[in-house]
Length: 481
Image 1 (cartoon, rainbow, N blue to C red):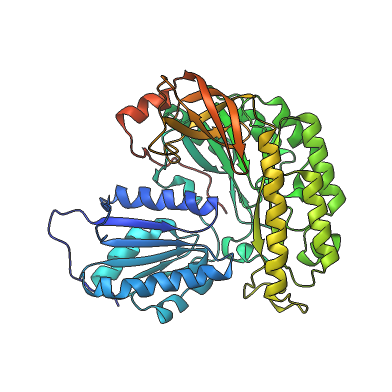
Image 2 (image 1 turned 90 degrees about the vertical axis):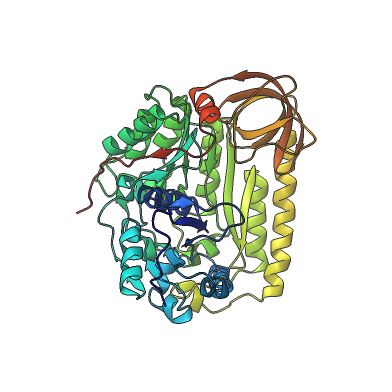
């Protein structure tokens, strides 16, 4: 239960945010961080114990539950020894388990749902004053959280939510029941946010949505996503535009044309496959089949031969036969993904797949998974080797930093999204600058290269004077009815 011992007068409370899950959760954590700092909290110093620990959770996989409750149990003696410490749990697992979290872990002070980010400071204060745990779970979105203060992880790069929620009913996925039905932001609000970000030094943005290319369905605006991509191309100073994750069902030719014809939209596409078997796709309730998926890839590569395509794949879905698995392997060979996020199927309570017959033995799933990973890594390596001797440009990242202490390397992402480590030689490159170089060698998951030139940016200038994350105040956005 909460205790009401207060910190020393005048001493700011410290915080730590622990994030699990997808890019949407990462972006939500930036908002949580911004909210806390706007209320006077400060980041905890490394090695110190925070006055507040916030878990921003994921519920997609079974081990998410185990990870959260394991971490909470480890905090019990720490909290008992530190009067005034608070623990909050938010995100998809909080939306799913709600009050069950307090039953399993009474040490928690606040539980807040995916639609309740803005309530966190008030809930923390109420828990402290009333000496009682607080739970707030809204069942539907009211305000887009983009209006909240946000502390970005990087000066030069930012996430921009264009929608929340999902209208799909994939049988393995619990996200729609936790994030709700799709709600789209108005394009004017999105573009205004991007313009503010660019004015603040951002050179790269990633458009986010649970089903990003379905954008416009809630607004009744056909081809809204491709129009948004083209509009991003008109923003001065915005050098790179990415988006994730699209759904093959909604991936239309106007989007491919917009990608190919808009200079600052990067030639990279993350498009989840999940399975290459038509029968498994039907059981998953994925509204496309192998032929359509491969057809999209063919059209993308015809329009953008340099495009890098990545994906998600689930192994061991209920009913998956060896033939089904081989069909997935065949798609991987044909698609030649630059990389793939591979997962062993995990039951999620509340999803139709969890109660399906023909659940696959773990030993079989593991063996198939290992075969898939071996193939994916081999193709990734071959695709990276094809980049050797090419000249590429990377956006230097602070988070990926130097490759090691013995080399003068900088790391970043190429235009098509590949991780690259470049030797600087005599050059100087700051986070947010663009580094051009020649690829000299490759591994399955990164490129190695020699730098030839640096292009400085305002983001690089800002990183010198403000090496830590930038804070951007939220701007007014559309309120969902």
